[in-house]
Length: 328
Image 1 (cartoon, rainbow, N blue to C red):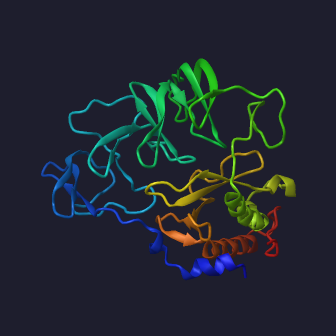
Image 2 (image 1 turned 90 degrees about the vertical axis):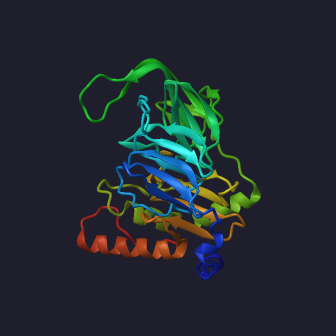
Image 3 (image 1 turned 30 degrees about the vertical axis):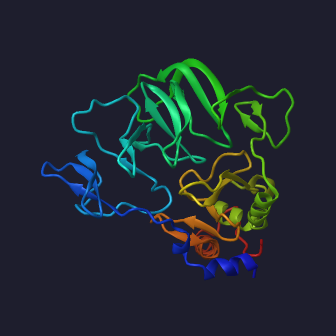
């Protein structure tokens, strides 16, 4: 068995969590939500409506993504701002930004960045709440493979349909620094295809980072097999090949490399944590976060995925993308 996986199972997950001040929600007499510290000092006044069932005295989470506090409800006395959802504060009680509204909730972090809205313009903040890209465009997509599309002079189409589209305006593409980039005149298979225009491969790695990615490449076939076992259009081996890229590096309050998984068209498969991996700063330990926000060692996660893939195939023997547990 691979030495790195033996090491993974021996080290408690708690060893990698950073200690933060204990904070708790509290509920005012008029049923509004605020935050206090362990000593009972009010950090954030009770001004927010709650639609999630928070209990008085409930602990705030203390894990990945907990460097800021999201209040998903409206704020007492504040006027709603178009395309926003909730309010984000830091753990000291400072207001940071209003997240962009996405899929009836606050925008997700994609490649380490979350959209926010200020004065009708869209920008990006990192998981520490730091503004990385200033809000200056009317709309910006979330980041995928190092790039995001933006437009100015555009708006949501005027329709009653649940899923609306952005129409009109002038469009462009930005990199992760917020810089407008132009398509390539000459390109290779490594570059990103956006609607028939190609943009240069955005990732650069140290030797240490290359070794981290080599670990995932070793398990490419088995991860691909469990991912595509329930896809009902038959795929070639080339079509099923996955791509792994480091989209976040260790920083304050985040001692991990985040590795995202992409399909062969460079579409992000890690958008909702399904194939999003976290590697410790020393490069020796790999985890995935489950739907209960618990960090699961890679080996344990893969064993469970293999088990589920085998059970699925027993019940659906006509699946075209056959799972074989001999691919690593």
